[in-house]
Amino acid sequence: MSLSVGRLAPSPTGAQHVGNARTYLLAWLAIRSRGGRMILRMEDIDSPRVKPWAAAQAIDDLRWLGLDWDEGPDIGGPHGPYVQTQRLDHYATALEQLKAGEQIYPCTCTRSDVAAAASAPHAGQEGPIYPGTCAGRSAADAVGLTVPYCWRWRTSGGRGPLEFHDAVAGEQRCNLSRELGDFVVCKHDGTPSYQLAVVLDDHAMGVNEVLRGDDLIPSTFRQLAIYDFFGWPAPGYAHAPLVVGPDGRRLAKRHGDTRISILREAGQGPERLVGLLAWSCGLRPTAEPVTARDLQSDFELARLPKERFVLTEEHWKSICE
Ligand code: GLU
Ligand code: ZN
Image 1 (tube, rainbow, N blue to C red):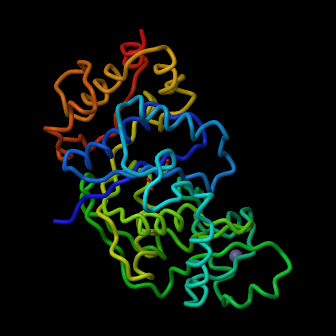
Image 2 (cartoon, rainbow, N blue to C red; image 1 turned 60 degrees about the vertical axis):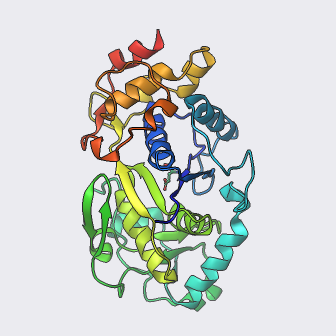
């Protein structure tokens, strides 16, 4: 068995909340309970919403939770830099390989072009399926374009349905071209998309186990196609159920303020929050205060409930007062 290498990969787009804390705790436990290596990576590309203060706050929140890592932006390490905006040259090299392999093509469609041409009237979480308008172009056609363009991954011609075994969600299967369609790997401004950056980084950093929120299951199929192109082994995946509000929607501001920093700045320790999370994950029978370290010895991902966890106001109050 090779050493487990995992990562915590916050996006500094805002404050980290209880839902993020639960996923980080699980990702950390999955690795640390087996003596594995942990990496912290700041995912600060692919979002217009990156906030200058949020990266430092995320690091403070993670440390406060009792999590640690062997490599990261704050401590360095052999696979740095650990901040995506400092890794642009790595991405540029890969992009050239994708162009040379005609795996991607320049797409001049605007967001509304794609929405208008898509057959499904209601675009879900994943957005409309790209109708293939620009798929006839080759990579070299980018040279003559006078309007902004992004680069899209060509899903047609890929091998059959993609499958993976998820350590939490079980067997997963998807026909990428039919169910998700061609996706953006590099935006109009030349920065890579999350899909591309995450694969290149996980591979470069030796990450072989990924635990993240179950909202990213569709993205995993896109990422598997990228691993396939490069001929790299994909990591093992575990997608943990998200925390939702009483209305069943993903935890957000509308459900009240559940920022980790509120507890930290109030001078609290993490034990009550970690206790609540441990109980929500089936790791403890009650929400008694506990530390992340305490949970390491008998951690079992298999105990994690398959349903999303509904955080109520009472839960939050019980750890705040
Ligand atoms: N940076 C992403 C997020 O915070 C996580 C991406 C991943 O784990 O692959 O949602
Ligand atoms: Zn297009």
